[in-house]
Image (cartoon, rainbow, N blue to C red):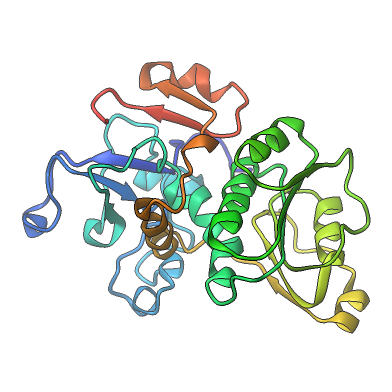
Length: 295
């Protein structure tokens, strides 16, 4: 997806070892913080309008551990990371908050607010379908959020039995599909995290009139067919965007630290930093690499 030759890793929490003089008393050495993977200044017009992913002070799509910007800012799979604009970028964690559980707060967990939370906040009675797949942890994080945060019916579907089993253990109504059918009933909200055209089309055709379709997938194309006439006749709100990392981290961390939402069981593999290379090559729904000095 990106040309090789840049540091990897973008989701992380860390222990602060040193701060610049202007941050003393604001960012505390020795405390743990979750870090936005998107770089933002916090003071430009976009940041002040809660659109920090479009920060005006930096080149577009600046982030840790991804593509050309990773060469400048580094990656999270490192012993130490220099965090710019730390007052904006860091979110403090309570002593009781488990580092492993919230390691993915900045992206995969925040995606669940993008896909479902922002809509359920306005109407908790939305009948919700979550389509799991290629974005494996995102689908599960989202289905769990819809279950604990919403009041309406929730269904998680996937073509992977292991993820279906995990969703079932989390108490989420789930159904295994050998392949994606043309539609899967009618829902107020469809959250797509499958990453393939068949799942996308099923999701769009599973909307109630004027329903909401939100997508986590990235398709590397400017040409994408949709069942336009069907959607035109019934009405649809299609929500496609990058995640608002810093803003949605705050939303999700509040739910986690309140005890309502526990993302911990979705972590399927934990590895020490010294074993990171081998762990990175092993397929898993959610891998977390832990440094020895972070508890």
